[in-house]
Image (cartoon, rainbow, N blue to C red; front, side, top):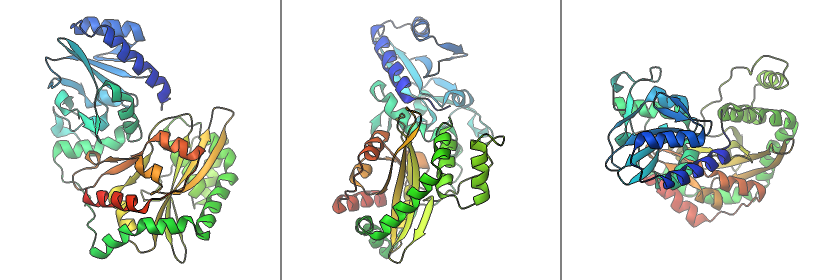
Length: 395
């Protein structure tokens, strides 16, 4: 179940403040008992947890500890909430986030680890001390968890198997030709022209009409707890081409059939493709729950570069803001370029996450999307967008 990060954030702040009052106690058992009592935690073997976070207490003489922390199967149980290591040292207490996105590999009994066989344990030294330039420490726990939240356990498993077992990655990093490189760097100019064109208005109206057509179903789907299922259902209602599948989804949302039909969205760059005379557009549909502060996935860097290497290519995002706080309503819909300045500046590059033969993947900061949906802006600074693309090409 996806949690409201605001509630977790409040309790994590309270945890940090509470630990400051006992940070010189230097007794793991006493500290654990005090924290358990203060936050009404349940003890499951070595993990203390509630709905908002899970804690593992450990001791060390310094921040660089190599102790075994948890088994991967135990971590899997709590990976949907912040998993925090409370490291008790002689004169201080340090906190580290240990969700799977922050793990580099699995150390013990890992030779049996596969996607279908969750085996092995990780050490303190297997926990990354920074992610995308964000240090893994108390003040950044919530920020780091937001990055993890849209990846989740399943999203990290293949990377952990690859890094742990040294299985050769199946993918290959995209290597552009000279003409590809030139087309990629012209992408911001194409996007700028498209945003001012009649074709942009046609695309926006087509997507808006779909949202209006399925407005009631979208609002019902917004109540689905599982963030991935919720996103796939809403995105398919807007862009799906299989009319029978759309009907089956609607019947399920109306309670006229048992469970959602089994369907899998294609792992393509955009959910909706439309070709115009001057433009080849791919649009990724993203739903934004306005009461949540999670970071949505953006794009695979190699895939976006390969798409932009085409002469007429334009890549867009269509954001659907949903406010469930007052009987449910669609706040706004925004069609914008990947190069929109605020959006581009908020893009988080996750190079470490994607494997050895990849430039990585990206996310957006949820707070920036929130502002963009409430106050849409279409400004693109070509020089900054070109510099951003060169940065991606150099990864």
